[in-house]
Image 1 (cartoon, rainbow, N blue to C red):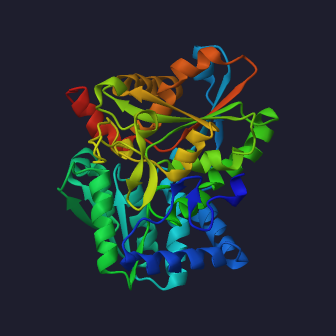
Image 2: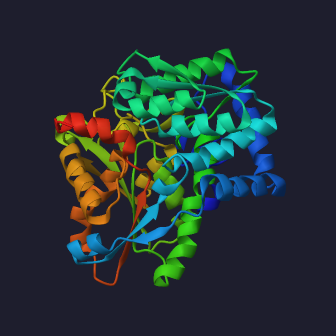
Length: 398
């Protein structure tokens, strides 16, 4: 099942595809042909894995969360520590891979969109390493929320373009990045940061980030002698979740749980949970579940977390939802803040607010688990970037 999708047209079941202007079709076809050729190339794969080891610091550890396990007193909780990667999140896995594609394609200019800023930082990092011109698009609301990451991108030599249109968040940043790409298609490589967008991007991002799941297979055998019973990851566009889910899709005994942002509550409509409260439609070049009104207009989103504040989701997640291979739930901002503090105090780990969504679901999940079961949480990123937001939300006097 997992090895033959997407199909030749880029669809996972009815989701995915290339819904883009004709001007982008050449670039997408060129990218697909290059990637198809290089993904079987030994030199390319050796360079990719060498960079992951020596530059990123992989493999990331699988860590036993002793105090959280004792607190819930049911199954054992393990943490896949993507927060320990260079730049502090899983995003670097994909950008290392895509910058190599850009290098092999001879592109000299790199563009990207970012919400929480981690993809922007990761893109600026790999572009700096190769001496490439880098432009990052970011909504003005996210620029305010993620000022530390904005400064990091600038330190790395990237030009940050603040987007004021629409809701001034990730959706609008992606719109502007696509406009840039159409205008500068000859010399520009667009590094999309999630398993979203037109084919072949959802496949490429998934494949590069699947290193997380493949490592987990080996680490699980070493740590507890079998595969996990449940894997939990937050879902915005869905790259961290898909990276850890993908190698397990055919393992039917492993439960896959994606956690979306319920914001102020699903019932209020002020959230970012298209898999829980959305319907199929087309956004940013692909068909997937998205938040839209009865006229097909994209609805506004609300989340404490900039990285999950997006009205759509990757097409492969949409397919996994429909075939019931993965379960998608949602947690509120209040639940997230509670989990954020708990993980800090119990495990000495500062999770990103995105990641705290996965931890927040433990309150619902753990009472259903048995003592001999094993749960893995994908710690998609560290929370240094969110401290300004937390201080503001909680009105803390420093």
